[in-house]
Structures are given as structure tokens and as C-alpha cells.
Length: 140
Image (cartoon, rainbow, N blue to C red):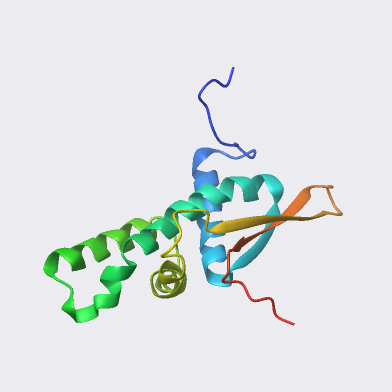
């Protein structure tokens, strides 16, 4: 029985699953939209929203710049370190705190959108796009 056991295992052990979601979140923050299987996409939303929340929580403090107090700078550093657990590139981390955090400042959650797209030809896996709401501009 799976009582109180949440989350999908996706055929991976715990460390492989953690690495998978860290990489997916990093790609989502870098590109704004990624395509993956529907099961991975549904699980990814929680990880992405939790990571984006770190950028949203300190966006006002980061806007102060040099005028921030010592305690406020410590909060910013703490948020960056916590986000760094998931986000694996400095480019994506900088984008999280400079663009994505301020963009979602007025929202209380629900930063991602899941769009079901197609069935993959090789294994008939249902595919889906995961995108950041209001940030993704499709290229022509």
C-alpha cells in the first residue's frame, strides 16, 4: 500500500530523481519553456514553484541594492543559497533573482503552466510543455 507516499518514482532511485528534477528546473528557468513527459511535467511543477518562491520572497530586498541593511543582505544570501540547491547554473540563478522573481511578485503561487502536446512516436509517451506564465515568448 502507498498510504502517505506522495510523488512519482519514474523508474529511478532517489538520487537520480533529484538530479532529474534539478536539471529540469534549471532548464525551465533558463529557457522559460521545456517539453518533457506528462508525468515528469506534473511532478516538476512543485519543484519549480518552490524554487521560484525563493526569488519572489526577496525581490523587494534585492531591489534596494546597496541601501539594504545587513540583515536584509543576509536574507538575500540565504535565499540564493537555498535556490542554489536546485538551480545548477549561475545563469539560471541570476535570471531567477533578476527577472523571474520580480515578474511573479504579485502572485501567491502557480508560476507554471502545463500544456499537453502530443504522443511521442518512439514509445507513445504523452508529452507536455511546462512554461513560466507570462515569461515565455515563442520564437517565430
